[in-house]
Amino acid sequence: MGRRKTSIWIAFVTGVTLMGASACGGGGSDKASGDDAKPSTQPSASASPSPTKPAGPPMLLETITPQTGTTVGVAMPISVIFTNPVAAKARATVEKHMKVSASQPVVGAWHWMGDQRADWRPKTYWPSGTTVKIDADMTGVSNGNGRYGVHSYTHTFKIGDDVRADVSVTGHTMKVTRNGAPVRTLSINAGSAEFPTWDGTMAVIDKQEKVHMTSCSVGISCDKGSPNYYDLTLPWDIHLTQSGTYVHYSTGDPNPGSGSARGSHGCVHLSLADAKWFYGQVKQGDPITITGSPRGKAPADNGYADFNLDWPQWLAGSGSGETTTAAL
Image (cartoon, rainbow, N blue to C red):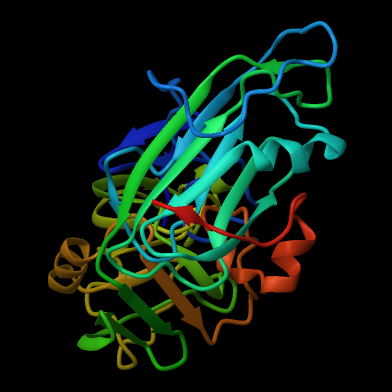
């Protein structure tokens, strides 16, 4: 199922929603989002070189995710959106001015999702309890296209409990763990053969108590007479991809599980009671891993599916390569 939205960026709860096409079964991916990347009031710890040529228009950051002061899951990347494209020749320098510090040392790297989004993720998941800080000192830094940074930006956030959900499409189950211990196994239904669910690991983008979902918003069907048409407001929605994948309750599939054998339009369906319970367990950045679907893994930039790239693939999109976080 999915929802209709007209804006690109939308603030929500502890994070900010990545918005794109928004209905179950939609494909593709768009740019990421985060909270307003306001300049810090104090200089960051990064270097601030003078421009090597007269400064042009400013290079600004559109957003930084996660929001400062939030607690997120172990699969949450740092995602930085620039207002203008950053040239390939400038990316290594830009990365070196986006310093990542942590209270526990973590190996990680930046990776460019196109020319305006750069994500930093650890090689493996963040350790729970880690405090993380990004100091993006862009003052005087060139984007390689005639623009120079004029601000520094600082965000600090914390990694919370290690909450994970593993979904088996063929087994019709979702196994939920917290800090390595099993919590509950829930009955689910996932996508149908016609509208398969994305496979792979997707960090939670956000969650919302009610979402207006329509088949027309992602091109499934705008024909009210079609069996695939829907226009519903549904509760307890966990957002996984920009293309419209959610974990949620559906009135059309009230008792999901192997016995009902009903397929969705690409979302993961839970019963009403289980959907409400799961909603209370998860937060932005918690990894939801789906297996057994024929669709393949969600693209890394389709939300926060960064861990769908293996480490060599991740490093291939980095300008400065693997680093260890600075001490915090």
